[in-house]
Length: 186
Image (cartoon, rainbow, N blue to C red):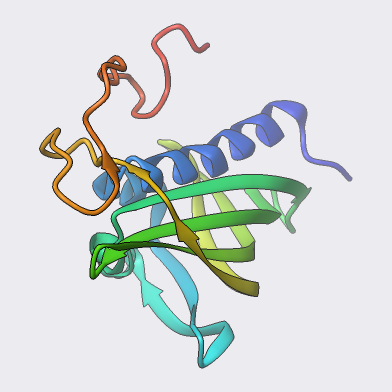
């Protein structure tokens, strides 16, 4: 049995919405992409690259996202996606491969902490659409790279730290409905 095309597309959209919301630092939106009873399982690098910490429900996801507050900028590049039906209708599984960049500034030095990772996911269809019900993050490799320059965060529009670019003239994101999607997206 295979996942219906419309369900596969909706679940893939959910995965990409998660990456986009994390990178845009819209952590409240990230929380809403999970079910109220979701379990998020995370590693504890560098001690453990396997998922060893558990966060439950929306509050747990919110707590996990708060750990990103000290990171200046992130970029999650989804490089592989596999989806399969679960045991029942409205339940699906996914294995997502991702390269996640975590840029930080310390002592006027910019560092890119790169995680080559995979998410082993469980998805549930809810009245609000597909949501992540279980996510286990496993890190396959960690790299640390020096960075010459980093685009300034949008929060205050100023570049105050080492090598940050001045605020660009790129357009501001529009309010979208649902969050993260263009109004023109069907």
